[in-house]
Length: 226
Length: 247
Image (cartoon, rainbow over all chains, first blue to last red; front, side, top):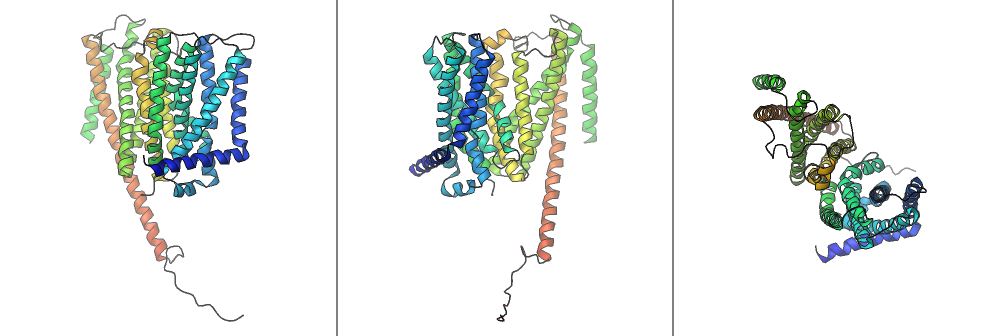
């Protein structure tokens, strides 16, 4: 990694951030969808405090669908507007991917923490281990952003790319969801602390692998002109 | 070729007869119907092999950019899906016979269903691209991306203590030496002939795909030659045209 690569990545991130802040329409719709899914989950458990196992599953499924719907947008909008080739002229493919990945990680972190906070308030679940909940949710956000970004990058240029992006991401993200559920279950009092930390470590490994391999795989998939 | 297929057909027929003739397995709800395992386990092994082979072929395509590797990759995914479906069907039959339910969300059943989804999505992803090179590149990258979840779902998840405790699915039967000689012979014999059948299917399908690629290239070349010969503005020589000065 050299300094120009880093500068390009940050420039792409900045461009994503500024263009999103200009209209805020996409960000608003993403958050609205996430909020609605949390409210729907809370409504499903109306009058009852869900057991830790069920609560962990509900929260993870909410985070998964929120990520799958909102995160590929940064790639697919670029594809639809026809500006991606222009972007590739200005930045290396790996840097373009990395810039968008950073933006997705930021968006995922914001969404995940807001959704978890709302979920805990609305469903009134008790959190015996808030530290594990925070760390578990943090790495779930990283793993989801890494996986969904890569799937979004792969479906660029495909027919039915919005639908295909979600379908491609879901089976790839299942192990992360399983590990996330394990960590959150322990944080909500449904499992032991060592089990929970084992899942957090698994999530950390998964996030690092996806985030490190993402730029290389995306650049390899975009390179078709040989 | 014909002789190989004949040997293969005879071998599979012999193994089928052997599987029926071998004594019943003990410690099963329906001992006589535990024979499904002779086909279930080899299908699962061959499916996993093709899944991991797909990742290797994907890597080869991305490093060489030769569409021949993509033909091999596509065949590998299709065969993984075929043997995965066989595994799922025989597993569902086994579940009904031994556990009383067609589907009971057993962790092993569910994790294998997710593996099947990985293959189904690979095929859907290939269908999403019309351009052969783009399709090959994206499919190869996805095959590499799927390697980690596939490894987790096939090798790690079923061996987690909490999953082992919750699952009805037998695990480590071979490792613990719980198969008697008749079962070992039946299992390894069926695996051998199914693997040979899979290899034959793989090589035939790859040959057909490569021939199709060659034909497509030849047609493309002929089309280019024809358009060049017809003096089409896109490919012909552009000559200066005189412009009249009259107004």
